[in-house]
Structures are given as structure tokens and as C-alpha cells.
Picture (spheres, helix red, strand yellow):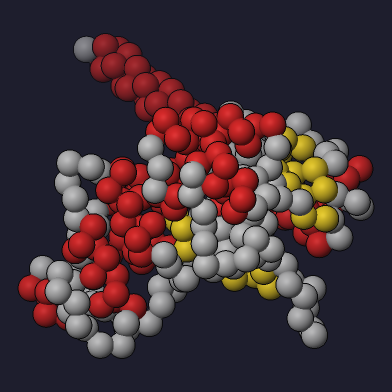
Length: 302
């Protein structure tokens, strides 16, 4: 009896020891995995920051054309002689991707063309036209006095149980647009690639995505295809060309303002493949000031 009890006790002790050993082994592996992940993330952060600094060095001394930046210095460091301004990714250093977007190729939420913005929303969601509500609510949100027909004041947002209301000043960040009456998460996700919190200084069709071209120029998909075919061979340079190709002009602004990049650029750096391990997104004003060679309008990383 005593011998059997001793055997059972030995087995229990052995089981406890084995369980503790397995648990300790798992814990060590998890710590090693976490340490490796932290190492990879830290290295990616350093490489992203290095790519950002190198890009700014090359960008500020480069030359903007209608649809790209030609690099005169720093090209050897990045391994490329030019970077498109239409958000096309350029891979440098094996797994570091750089993107630049000219804000004149997007619809600005800071200097908005409300008609173009409404057309964008209507094109994205043609069966649920909320453009009057969104347009007027945008004016109420950013204006000093609520005076629109279809918009919303403080009382609307309180009734909806939302912990915010119209700010009465320009949007401070792009995601703020999703708070406005008539917007929802899915609609914002669909239009987000086509809008920017950065200002426009004109309109540049050469760097605009399809959604922006259709909304700004108020053209159909067939006309878009015709315009893309033309611009594949050469950049669009004037209202005269646009009139020949599309039968319309931008109007109201001289050609030297339109058809060229803005001084404002959106910059994206992704590190890692196939999914980014670390990324930087920033809005840059390339116009030098008395104290600074450029200004950072916004900065995101993660």
C-alpha cells in the first residue's frame, strides 16, 4: 500500500515538474519571440527614419516636373533618379518603399472645391446620394455660423449622442471629415485615397488618380480612358490641350498654376515585405522659410 502511494506521489511530482518545465520553456520562447519582434521593429524604425532623411535631402535639391521629381543629389543613396508624384511606390534598399503624392492631384479638405467633392462622393456611392447633407454639414462644421439647409449644428450631434459637434474652423486632420453628418466609416474609407488635409495651389491632372480626375473634371469612365491614353504618352500642360482631348477647360486659373505640382507633398515610407513592419506618413511644405528649409504639416508613424 505504502509502495503504491509512493509510486503515485512520484508520478504526480514528475507531472508537476514536467508541466512547470514545459511552461517555463514556452515562456522563454515567447520572450525570445517578443525580443526578436522588438529587434525587427526597432531596425525598421531606424531604416524608415534614415530613408525619410535621405529622401528629404534629395527632394529639396531635386527638380519637380509635371509628374515626377528628378533627383540631382542623393540619387545614389536612394538608388533611383526620379520619383513619381502620383503615389506610385518606388522600392529602394530591397524592402523600403517610398511614395510621393502631389496634393494638386487630390481634392483638398482645407481649400475645398465642394462641387468636385460632392461628385466624388456621388461617384463612389451613386445609389445613396447624401451630397447635399454632407456638403452643407461640411460648411456648418468649418464655418463660423450655421446657415445651411441640409447641414447640422450642435443640437444634431447631441441628439445623435455623439461626444462632439461642429468646430467652426478648418479641419485639423483628415479623419475629422468622417465625423460630419452624412458620412460613415465605409464611405470615408472609399473616398480617403482621393482627399487630403493639405492645401491645393491649383489642379494637376498628371498626378491625379482616376477618382479625382472623374470628380474634378466631371467626366465619364469613357472620357477618363481617353484622357489616360493621351497622358500615357505625354503630360497634360495646358487648358488648350485639355480642351482638345476632353472638350473642356479648367478655367479660372492660368496654366502656370494648373497642370503643375503643388509645393505641398504627401510622403509615405514603408519598411518590410510583404506587409510593412513600420511606416511613416507625413505632409510636407517644400517652400523654404527664413528659418527652415521645409515644414512638416502633419506626421504619422506606426
